[in-house]
Length: 239
Length: 239
DNA sequence: CGAGGTGTTGAAAGTGCTCAAATGGCGTGG
DNA sequence: CCACGCCATTTGAGCACTTTCAACACCTCG
Image (cartoon, rainbow over all chains, first blue to last red; front, side, top):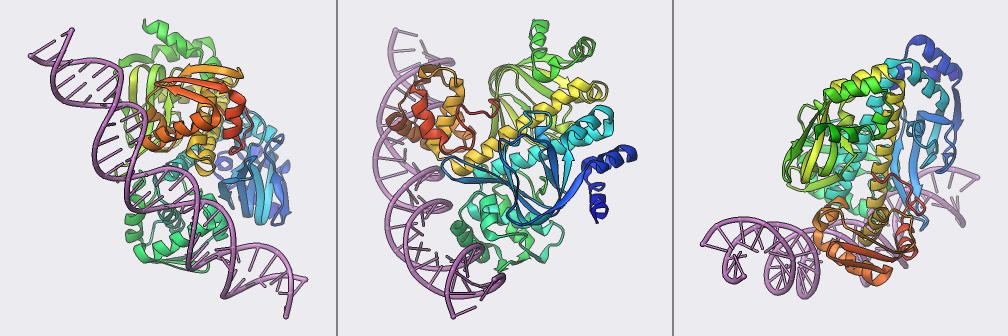
């Protein structure tokens, strides 16, 4: 089982760029474990010994202010990872990571990543590419928070879930709690709920429970993407 | 003159990590030029041939939505650079860069950066460190936009300008236009102006024209940092 | 069935935005 | 040197969007 799951790692951007032997060695030092919903993977301020890769389930990356407010920076699932920004700067996690849907997690020792950067060109470039993408995703978030309204942010979120391929009657499920989506998009649950109503009325989106149906992708993107710099379908990383 | 300015490059984080010969070669392929306020250095969507380093002056990094709104992602000065996130991902600038105070700019061919990554360990690690810091700065922005009020965002901005060393009667000048600071912090000029009034009344900050005086740093940080996850003085990169 | 968590709705308050107008500084052309 | 015009900043008034607080409906799980 462990090995089966580890195999998932070989499909991840940066590890695909690694030669077989190095990867095998890396995997042999990587532990895979199951964590139940509610578990903390790490806390801000802790010494960062590992990069954590999500193999299944969902993990919330967030920070807490001393005033008790919570800022959700990301919510990640299969194939995504975090902690890589600690390896070459600071060595501390700056965010909390909490499992919000039972998850399988791979913990890769940071030291090994560092070693591989030293000896493997392609891996390093892949890592640099990855960090560039991640930074762009953050810029995307900043832009959205500063220029989009709540319904527009949700619309953009839905369009990214839709994948941007089909154009009529796209259907799918929301990946996690509405409350958490709201937090991820920087708004209150109530605001989220009301914004959905607005999207229903003004952008042809049907939402019942976790089921989402977008009548016309184009209509929604007109509503949403006029307030975003990236053209539709949203080019920025999905993350 | 050019050479004098180029010397500034040797003091920049990632170039400090480069060996003398490589750096000399890099510099010989680097052009330095003056650009007047109002000049565009690059536009989103353009092919990214260079990394631009600001040697003096100020440059605004921003995006425009099709609706005409503007999101200012950063405003940088001496020692800062941009475009490094295009080298290993995408190869296109995703933001506009406009000179907002006469600036000396060094243009370093992206291809050379790539070459140096291939042959220089220390440089690569420094670059990875730099990208990590930049990402953290963006996370900082995201957090602020989602949990801080306008006056608090300004307060945090001022505290970072103050440098966090002195504790009473810190004085300094605002680095650029209030209008631009407002945009950088994701608010309207009017909101910025009114928020300053609030800071004057509630946090002991005196602001007259571009002059800023903080009576008690601690008082301001109490007002501001309760809504931020990083303890005072703000640990995130100053950028 | 009851408890707790999730989501929705209403009402009221707050925050920030828009539009408009006044102020003041500063550089240009006369 | 002055008048003019432009731009940055401030202020006022009204409005729109979000938040907050409260209440309630649902659903799931023991």
